[in-house]
Length: 92
Image (cartoon, rainbow, N blue to C red):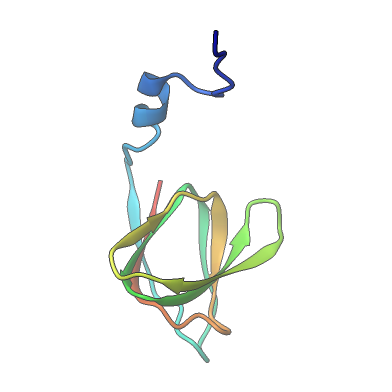
């Protein structure tokens, strides 16, 4: 018999995909960083690379993201340097 190692039930997982707040992200390569506070996902309108500061304080680069992609990550800042994606929306 298989056992489940899932951290959440199906209902809890679906509830985490419902967002209550959104904020347009304006970080542009060569411009300034955009501190958004604690958010749980990032919508990428026009694909490219995105550098974010995670809630842990570490910077991470997501490369070659597709247009229309949603990253389900907990982050606090979109870093301008090396971010080439545009039309992004921070979701909470």
